[in-house]
Length: 608
Image (tube, rainbow, N blue to C red; front, side, top):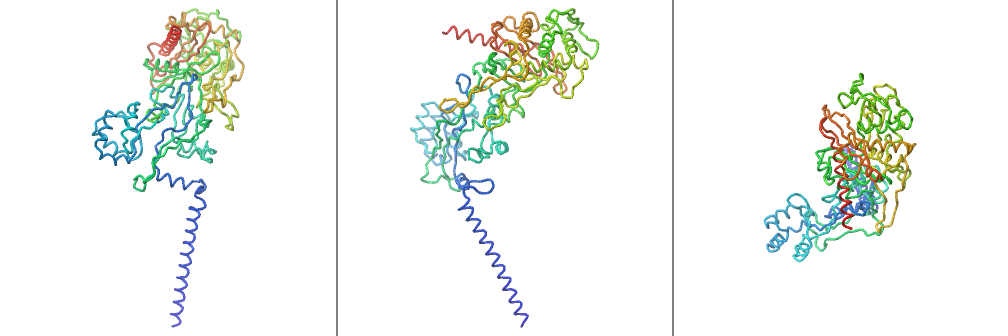
């Protein structure tokens, strides 16, 4: 009997403990729910998640009409991003109006399509989107179609003005870059914008080009969109109409005005398109201001679908360092002349072969007795190999720096609006004359360096700036690709000033001699194909040997300036991975481009 009472007490104690535990858990759960639903709805967890906003978002269908990013313009105010047009927005609840056959027929007639495709197209749209043409491009409505669709009053189908960030026919894809979702980048670089709600981890941000380097200024204050609300099955909630959401601010978003000239950019892209060159780059600079007027990179890619063109197609070849070949003879000539080591008339003997190091000239049998000036015009390897060996490593390195080939030359400033070091160009390479591990004055190494091989690496941007430096009497400056950042109302937020490059310049006298050398290249040297150009050209050709998948290929270069007497444009063109025989495609593109500029100017003068 006593044992039974003891067992009963134990059971009651266990039940009480279980009840207390359940009550404790229930109270804890209620407290947690109260905390989530009442006290921390606007800032839940360490990530400060807005639960109300997330709950609304789950029931909201949204169609973005404009990302709200700032515009990018060329130097003349022509837009390089953000083309507006009217598209046909289709909302999922449009399917409920498909029973009205007369309206379906009229809609098909307005769009110029078979009425049989209206129903399956609308039914297939599970979320709000724009009507696409068979080729996948968005349908663009003309004013008559817009008015007719308004009059039709088809529920869930309406014309809406949309801004396409990268419209069809756009230019300078590698310069502008592309935007995409990049949560890791946002968490790392835009913590303040995350905290104040200007960005979320799902926001689209600049990943390459100016979209990336100017992200902090172009980001905007919110997108323009239309939205409606649905129940758990996706059915529109009654009484809640489609709502337009659009931020209004007379100052933001900021816009960026580049130094590019859209027409000059387009002409260079067309020059590449007419050529067989698939990989290469070109840069056009204003000689006096060092502003980029055009910058082309190939292969091209679609910024709206950046991953379809390959893993590196979006990389800007104009900012990538590569072997320069004989255009580096400009540096060797500058050092030899300014140091007084050689005069233009000094003689050399080229037999075609040097006799050691496997070093040879491109001209079989050699040039014979040849002066330094003639050797530059006809690009004699033996002469410049010997000159480089006499100069030595330190002098070649020194003049490489004087001509801006050993450092990033794009505009930069530290600090810049709480951003630390700000650089206009995205992922610009430094270039180099000698590899960090190369410290000796080995003759074979120096001779290869003298003709732009071995360790020498130069970007097309640096090559164009070197040509501009020579055309501008030896003065070197940093290169700009953006003129200003502006408020929405057109007033200036920041204007980018001129900025000299670090280090000493070459002398005016040396620059003038080099200009004469470069004129000789076109008059009776390796650039004679440009002699009949519509504007007189001075420049230097180059051919750099390279390996592509173990196969011998050439990088073909031509750098120079035009017109000769009053240089206005400095241009560098490189055609990569070319056959080891055949014409210099870079020289041909250079000539075609200069002629197109001359023709455009003559036409403009004639029309006045």
